Image (cartoon, rainbow, N blue to C red; front, side, top):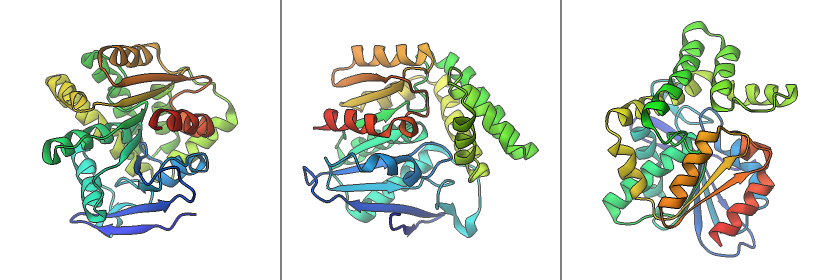
Length: 286
């Protein structure tokens, strides 16, 4: 278990783990951002024993997940702007300026948004490794907006009916339709996402709301991506063909971008093959 620290912000009690890696190869630092509904330690803990590139690793729990809450431990709607700003405040609190970023799913979108904001305000950009980042599931933003409506159904099912299991099933069918539905794996995913179901539902809505903005103004996504100079995209080989095709196109068009598809994985890739992914990350960041 990692020590959990709390940073009080205007609206949020932001939990985070700051880890020093013994015998690291460099003195550099890395920020790791998790996906919707699952805390940072649970997402990245199994991967850390195979990562020795960075001396310092920062793993916050995004608001609504893990040990981060609005004040009085309230659950409330979230936005990508808010999540990004809260991470930026944590970085300022720790005086972090030069670091790499790893983001998964929701955390991948927050990483891209945060990178764009830091470049705008501080003139710096960061190397990013993104595992199936939210909002890049499809190249066509109209198709993407249609896909995200499935997640709206999932979030509303959780909040309005209280049927957390059904809501999570809707989410899983949307995010990983080609997954191998092994009973143990399905139950494990259900258990992970059911820890804070209301926070999970609001996190899903945060991405869907952002995608709806992009569908009205595609330049929002284009401008955000343009601020990222070096990006390593990781996808699951079992994920949707259009997702992987979009990553291939991004890597082809953008210098400094690379796409790797991980065999035998779907959207849950950091939980399925942490050692393999750690190997790919170490090679790319070296």
